[in-house]
Image (tube, rainbow, N blue to C red; front, side, top):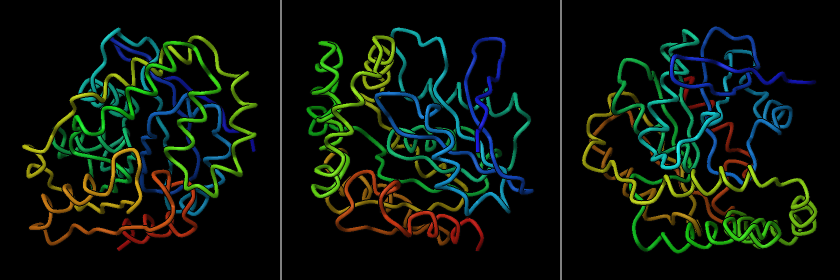
Length: 267
Protein backbone atom coordinates (compact mmCIF):
# COMPACT_ATOMS: atom_id res chain seq x y z
CA UNK A 1 0.00 0.00 0.00
CA UNK A 2 1.22 3.48 -0.82
CA UNK A 3 -1.26 6.19 0.11
CA UNK A 4 -0.67 9.37 -1.94
CA UNK A 5 -0.47 12.72 -0.14
CA UNK A 6 -2.71 15.29 -1.78
CA UNK A 7 -3.17 19.04 -1.36
CA UNK A 8 -6.44 20.94 -1.26
CA UNK A 9 -6.28 24.64 -2.15
CA UNK A 10 -8.65 27.46 -1.29
CA UNK A 11 -8.32 31.20 -1.88
CA UNK A 12 -6.45 31.59 1.40
CA UNK A 13 -4.63 28.34 2.17
CA UNK A 14 -3.19 25.02 1.12
CA UNK A 15 -3.67 21.93 3.30
CA UNK A 16 -2.32 18.43 2.83
CA UNK A 17 -4.46 15.36 3.33
CA UNK A 18 -4.66 11.72 2.41
CA UNK A 19 -7.63 9.56 1.64
CA UNK A 20 -8.40 5.84 1.69
CA UNK A 21 -11.42 3.54 1.68
CA UNK A 22 -14.30 3.36 -0.77
CA UNK A 23 -17.47 3.53 1.30
CA UNK A 24 -20.43 5.81 0.79
CA UNK A 25 -20.03 7.54 4.16
CA UNK A 26 -17.37 10.17 4.82
CA UNK A 27 -15.09 9.96 7.86
CA UNK A 28 -12.81 12.90 8.64
CA UNK A 29 -9.92 12.31 11.06
CA UNK A 30 -8.16 15.22 12.75
CA UNK A 31 -4.94 14.03 14.41
CA UNK A 32 -3.43 15.55 17.52
CA UNK A 33 -0.32 17.64 17.95
CA UNK A 34 2.81 15.77 16.86
CA UNK A 35 6.48 16.58 16.36
CA UNK A 36 6.24 15.54 12.71
CA UNK A 37 3.23 15.57 10.43
CA UNK A 38 0.97 12.52 10.35
CA UNK A 39 1.29 12.71 6.56
CA UNK A 40 4.56 10.77 6.90
CA UNK A 41 2.66 7.80 8.34
CA UNK A 42 -0.25 7.62 5.90
CA UNK A 43 0.16 3.91 5.20
CA UNK A 44 0.30 3.06 8.90
CA UNK A 45 -2.83 5.13 9.60
CA UNK A 46 -4.72 3.48 6.75
CA UNK A 47 -3.70 0.07 8.04
CA UNK A 48 -4.76 0.93 11.61
CA UNK A 49 -8.13 2.24 10.38
CA UNK A 50 -8.76 -0.57 7.89
CA UNK A 51 -12.01 -1.42 9.69
CA UNK A 52 -13.56 1.72 8.18
CA UNK A 53 -12.41 1.25 4.59
CA UNK A 54 -15.45 -0.74 3.47
CA UNK A 55 -18.25 1.57 4.63
CA UNK A 56 -16.38 4.88 4.71
CA UNK A 57 -14.16 7.03 2.57
CA UNK A 58 -11.65 8.31 5.11
CA UNK A 59 -9.93 11.71 4.93
CA UNK A 60 -7.04 12.57 7.25
CA UNK A 61 -6.13 16.26 7.34
CA UNK A 62 -2.90 17.99 8.30
CA UNK A 63 -2.83 21.61 9.50
CA UNK A 64 -2.45 24.30 6.83
CA UNK A 65 0.88 24.51 4.99
CA UNK A 66 1.85 28.14 5.52
CA UNK A 67 1.38 28.65 9.25
CA UNK A 68 0.93 32.20 10.52
CA UNK A 69 3.14 33.12 13.51
CA UNK A 70 0.10 32.97 15.81
CA UNK A 71 -2.35 30.19 15.04
CA UNK A 72 -5.02 29.47 17.68
CA UNK A 73 -7.21 26.36 17.64
CA UNK A 74 -10.23 28.30 16.38
CA UNK A 75 -8.28 29.35 13.28
CA UNK A 76 -7.13 25.76 12.78
CA UNK A 77 -10.79 24.70 12.85
CA UNK A 78 -11.94 27.35 10.41
CA UNK A 79 -9.13 26.49 7.99
CA UNK A 80 -10.00 22.80 8.24
CA UNK A 81 -13.64 23.55 7.47
CA UNK A 82 -12.55 25.56 4.42
CA UNK A 83 -10.55 22.55 3.21
CA UNK A 84 -13.40 20.12 3.90
CA UNK A 85 -15.91 22.27 2.02
CA UNK A 86 -13.46 22.84 -0.85
CA UNK A 87 -13.40 19.07 -1.35
CA UNK A 88 -17.20 19.01 -1.41
CA UNK A 89 -17.50 16.89 1.72
CA UNK A 90 -20.68 17.03 3.78
CA UNK A 91 -22.64 15.06 6.36
CA UNK A 92 -19.33 13.90 7.81
CA UNK A 93 -18.47 11.52 10.62
CA UNK A 94 -15.75 13.30 12.58
CA UNK A 95 -13.03 11.88 14.84
CA UNK A 96 -10.64 14.28 16.57
CA UNK A 97 -7.83 13.19 18.89
CA UNK A 98 -6.17 15.48 21.46
CA UNK A 99 -5.64 18.86 19.75
CA UNK A 100 -7.61 17.43 16.83
CA UNK A 101 -10.48 16.94 19.27
CA UNK A 102 -10.35 20.61 20.20
CA UNK A 103 -10.54 21.49 16.52
CA UNK A 104 -13.43 19.05 16.09
CA UNK A 105 -15.41 20.70 18.90
CA UNK A 106 -15.08 24.10 17.26
CA UNK A 107 -16.14 22.65 13.92
CA UNK A 108 -19.24 21.02 15.45
CA UNK A 109 -20.19 24.22 17.29
CA UNK A 110 -19.73 26.56 14.35
CA UNK A 111 -20.86 24.21 11.55
CA UNK A 112 -23.75 22.08 12.84
CA UNK A 113 -24.83 21.37 9.27
CA UNK A 114 -21.51 19.69 8.47
CA UNK A 115 -21.15 17.03 11.18
CA UNK A 116 -23.41 13.95 11.42
CA UNK A 117 -21.67 12.25 14.37
CA UNK A 118 -18.50 12.97 16.32
CA UNK A 119 -16.02 11.08 18.51
CA UNK A 120 -13.63 13.02 20.73
CA UNK A 121 -10.53 11.21 22.01
CA UNK A 122 -8.22 12.32 24.85
CA UNK A 123 -9.12 15.95 24.46
CA UNK A 124 -10.38 18.98 26.37
CA UNK A 125 -12.88 21.78 26.05
CA UNK A 126 -10.30 24.10 27.56
CA UNK A 127 -6.60 24.13 28.31
CA UNK A 128 -6.12 25.24 31.89
CA UNK A 129 -3.06 26.77 33.52
CA UNK A 130 -2.54 23.45 35.30
CA UNK A 131 -1.83 21.80 31.96
CA UNK A 132 0.31 24.60 30.53
CA UNK A 133 3.53 23.13 32.04
CA UNK A 134 3.27 20.08 29.76
CA UNK A 135 2.98 22.27 26.67
CA UNK A 136 5.59 24.66 28.01
CA UNK A 137 8.18 21.88 28.38
CA UNK A 138 7.56 20.70 24.85
CA UNK A 139 7.75 24.25 23.48
CA UNK A 140 11.00 25.03 25.32
CA UNK A 141 12.68 21.87 24.03
CA UNK A 142 11.49 22.51 20.47
CA UNK A 143 12.69 26.12 20.57
CA UNK A 144 16.06 24.88 21.86
CA UNK A 145 16.11 22.36 18.97
CA UNK A 146 16.72 19.56 21.44
CA UNK A 147 15.11 16.92 19.25
CA UNK A 148 15.94 13.87 21.34
CA UNK A 149 14.75 15.39 24.62
CA UNK A 150 11.55 16.63 22.96
CA UNK A 151 10.70 13.22 21.51
CA UNK A 152 11.42 11.51 24.83
CA UNK A 153 9.33 14.01 26.81
CA UNK A 154 6.56 13.71 24.25
CA UNK A 155 6.63 9.92 24.30
CA UNK A 156 6.78 9.74 28.08
CA UNK A 157 3.69 11.94 28.32
CA UNK A 158 1.50 10.15 25.78
CA UNK A 159 2.41 6.47 26.30
CA UNK A 160 2.01 4.25 29.36
CA UNK A 161 5.37 3.38 31.02
CA UNK A 162 5.65 -0.10 29.49
CA UNK A 163 5.21 1.21 25.95
CA UNK A 164 7.50 4.17 26.54
CA UNK A 165 10.29 1.79 27.55
CA UNK A 166 9.65 -0.27 24.43
CA UNK A 167 9.62 2.78 22.13
CA UNK A 168 12.46 4.69 23.80
CA UNK A 169 15.19 3.60 21.36
CA UNK A 170 12.93 4.31 18.38
CA UNK A 171 12.12 7.78 19.72
CA UNK A 172 15.82 8.55 20.13
CA UNK A 173 16.69 7.37 16.62
CA UNK A 174 13.77 9.32 15.16
CA UNK A 175 15.35 12.59 16.28
CA UNK A 176 17.65 12.57 13.25
CA UNK A 177 14.62 12.83 10.96
CA UNK A 178 13.15 15.91 12.68
CA UNK A 179 13.93 19.08 10.72
CA UNK A 180 14.12 22.68 11.89
CA UNK A 181 10.89 23.32 9.96
CA UNK A 182 9.22 20.49 11.88
CA UNK A 183 10.25 22.12 15.15
CA UNK A 184 9.09 25.57 14.07
CA UNK A 185 5.68 24.20 13.06
CA UNK A 186 5.43 22.26 16.30
CA UNK A 187 6.03 25.39 18.38
CA UNK A 188 3.37 27.39 16.53
CA UNK A 189 0.81 24.58 16.78
CA UNK A 190 1.57 23.90 20.46
CA UNK A 191 1.24 27.57 21.33
CA UNK A 192 -2.05 27.64 19.45
CA UNK A 193 -3.54 25.35 22.09
CA UNK A 194 -2.67 27.65 25.00
CA UNK A 195 -5.70 29.32 26.53
CA UNK A 196 -8.14 27.37 24.38
CA UNK A 197 -11.70 27.26 25.74
CA UNK A 198 -15.03 26.36 24.19
CA UNK A 199 -16.80 25.31 27.38
CA UNK A 200 -19.40 28.06 27.12
CA UNK A 201 -20.42 26.91 23.62
CA UNK A 202 -20.54 23.12 23.95
CA UNK A 203 -24.32 23.21 24.37
CA UNK A 204 -24.52 24.34 20.74
CA UNK A 205 -23.28 20.96 19.51
CA UNK A 206 -26.22 19.27 17.80
CA UNK A 207 -24.76 15.97 16.61
CA UNK A 208 -24.39 12.78 18.68
CA UNK A 209 -21.02 12.66 20.46
CA UNK A 210 -18.95 9.87 22.01
CA UNK A 211 -16.29 11.13 24.40
CA UNK A 212 -13.38 8.74 25.05
CA UNK A 213 -10.80 9.42 27.74
CA UNK A 214 -8.04 7.79 29.76
CA UNK A 215 -7.84 7.70 33.54
CA UNK A 216 -4.06 8.21 33.54
CA UNK A 217 -3.90 10.93 30.86
CA UNK A 218 -0.72 12.90 31.67
CA UNK A 219 -1.31 15.52 28.98
CA UNK A 220 -4.88 16.70 29.50
CA UNK A 221 -5.94 14.41 32.41
CA UNK A 222 -9.21 12.57 32.90
CA UNK A 223 -10.95 15.63 34.36
CA UNK A 224 -10.86 17.26 30.92
CA UNK A 225 -12.70 14.31 29.39
CA UNK A 226 -15.22 14.23 32.22
CA UNK A 227 -15.90 17.95 31.84
CA UNK A 228 -16.92 17.51 28.19
CA UNK A 229 -19.09 14.51 29.06
CA UNK A 230 -20.80 16.41 31.86
CA UNK A 231 -21.50 19.37 29.59
CA UNK A 232 -23.14 17.04 27.06
CA UNK A 233 -24.81 14.62 29.47
CA UNK A 234 -28.28 16.13 28.93
CA UNK A 235 -28.15 15.02 25.31
CA UNK A 236 -29.58 11.50 25.03
CA UNK A 237 -27.40 10.66 22.04
CA UNK A 238 -24.04 11.34 23.72
CA UNK A 239 -21.86 8.83 25.57
CA UNK A 240 -18.66 8.44 27.56
CA UNK A 241 -16.05 5.69 27.77
CA UNK A 242 -12.93 5.79 29.97
CA UNK A 243 -9.87 3.59 29.46
CA UNK A 244 -7.44 2.55 32.17
CA UNK A 245 -3.79 1.80 31.58
CA UNK A 246 -3.29 3.07 28.03
CA UNK A 247 -2.06 6.65 28.44
CA UNK A 248 -3.02 9.77 26.50
CA UNK A 249 -2.48 8.07 23.13
CA UNK A 250 -5.03 5.31 23.79
CA UNK A 251 -6.40 6.07 20.31
CA UNK A 252 -3.20 4.44 19.02
CA UNK A 253 -2.61 1.81 21.69
CA UNK A 254 -5.93 0.41 22.95
CA UNK A 255 -6.77 -2.62 20.75
CA UNK A 256 -10.54 -2.05 20.76
CA UNK A 257 -10.47 1.74 20.30
CA UNK A 258 -11.34 1.69 16.60
CA UNK A 259 -14.10 -0.85 17.27
CA UNK A 260 -15.72 1.58 19.71
CA UNK A 261 -15.61 4.42 17.19
CA UNK A 262 -17.02 2.20 14.45
CA UNK A 263 -19.83 0.89 16.65
CA UNK A 264 -20.85 4.41 17.66
CA UNK A 265 -20.87 5.68 14.09
CA UNK A 266 -22.83 2.66 12.83
CA UNK A 267 -25.57 2.54 15.47
